[in-house]
Amino acid sequence: MLSPPLRYLKTFHIAAIRRSFKAAGDELFITASAVSHQIKTLEEQLGLILFNRSARALTLTPAGAYYLEHIGAVFSRLDEATEQLHRRFAREVVRLQVPSFFASELLVPRLAGFSARHADTNIQIATGSTRNNEHAADCDVSIVVGHGQWSDVQATQLFAQTYVPACSPLLLRQSQIRVATDLAQGSLIAHNYRPDLWDRWAQQAGIQTLRPKQLIHFDTMSAMVHAAEQGVGVALVSAPLAAARFYSGTLTRLFDCELATGESYYLVTRAADADRPGVAHLIGWMLQQFGSPPHEQNLTSDEIR
Image 1 (cartoon, one colour):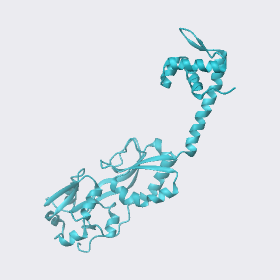
Image 2 (spheres, helix red, strand yellow):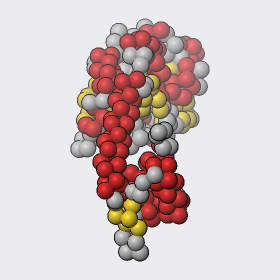
Image 3 (spheres, helix red, strand yellow):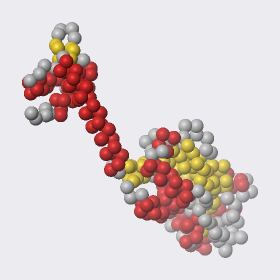
Image 4 (cartoon, one colour):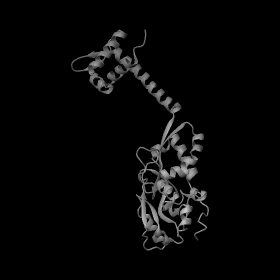
């Protein structure tokens, strides 16, 4: 005798547990009449009555009770096999949120190393232009800028955030910038979300009021740095993230004075996600790669001392 169709068995299993064709239909997204029809077809194929039907109740016959016991075990083993199949063979997807400039300067240049070691893990990387001061609900791992005061996540400090003025070498040669007060002669580049940083840097540099000839705002650090490299003006850039550009010479750091905001870059995840293999591998690799400030040699311009 051939086994009945799996969908009929699934319908019987749910109806037998629920003791209701209507409840089974709601769970299966079909009508109670469709459930009744499938059960009747199953009974005809088996040549057995599985349910006692009455106006007030739906009960199992001895044959139905026997079938439920064994069908339930089959579906339990099927669910277990499906779960094990997914765990063993499915490719895990890890969702990573990173500030765009962190991604371009630190993550992307080293990402091939992680990919080579963990080819079975897919990564979805988000680099939105919104504020990066919290762990997004739809991400597994985030690089977040803040003070580390998050109660609902696991946060590991990577390195401190500091800012320094920088511009293109050509703009520096063509300008009259020699001391900090000379910045008022030209254009300054600022971040939309941190408009106070130039004033805070100026105060630390001993300038009471910094009134530039022109102020240009961008919504990402990446855009600010690119504009500075193109000679648009002087940008207040992240010192640790721009270290490679200082070293390569596309950007020139103007002064030794750094603005320390008290913030740091943190690697953040939820406790529930931290034990997943793909997440754990990514976190371990990122701590190894970014657990200390990017190397920055003495790159202060020879023209400004």
